[in-house]
Image (cartoon, rainbow, N blue to C red):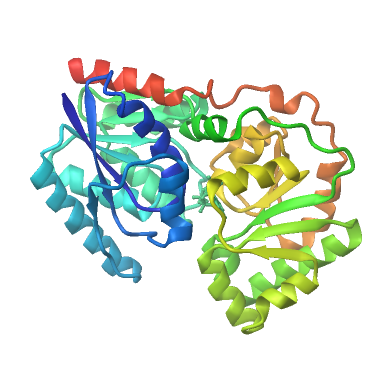
Length: 368
Ligand code: UDP
């Protein structure tokens, strides 16, 4: 039996890791997991609810870290390194592009344990995004790079990762683990209501919310678009954004937004997110995961950024970049006028059984 030390710590990672854990728990592939939760997100609404809803076992090791990013990074590295010494895993498994991902990658590399990166090969080509740096460095340190799509494999090929890494590196397009979880929880996508007017909004990237002037511009563009186009906006607010909104609009920020027709919500669980995706006609988001889930649920998306690591969504016309608040109204009107009858039929992210394919690939890799 091979032991994987899985490092997870932030909300998008529960969605991906739970799909993999469901398969690994069956022990058919000769692998067992020791899960380290880095403590990056620990509240019930950012962490606990996902363990309950997605059927994940409690972490084997729970780290406690501070909020300051630099101190937190050091504490995560130290905690993961200690777990590696204790557990002596055959490989370390990390997901996506958060600080927890990079901390796991560093600790594995220092300990000389092979690193497996799930969601390898994604690039937004925007090095101002902390996630982009985390992705590039993690890919460089990995022995196994599991890509969600062929586009991600070709990106790694362009970067020469095959020659840079140690011999035995495995790069494979295995499909998207988030699709596995969306199918498991959400079932088949339901059709959009014709003339529906609901939009799901998420906004939490530092580039959109940390600067008060920019955040106000976004909120005011959303208010004006709601008013002009007769929309209802559902807005589960990320904790980082809640702090910023309070700074921008004072303690009654949520009442102000409600007054503008923005239905402010606490951060939601995954089941609730799937329900909202069924109810709405469009998604406005700066989240990597949510723009892809919009595609899984057959909803078009405006991506509130000037780049995306999921460029295939732009290529098929399922998503459109909307980087500036002043362009929101026009871009949403254009998006709603489009014909989406064929768009969501394209298979971009695999068959919803990525975890099975990955487990089989890892089993074969361990046997080499
Ligand atoms: N999500 C959620 N509740 C929310 C907002 C997002 O469950 O209130 C889920 C969402 O469905 C997706 C994941 O969290 O699966 C994305 O996480 P986030 O937007 O925080 O990170 P990103 O994908 O941008 O890295």
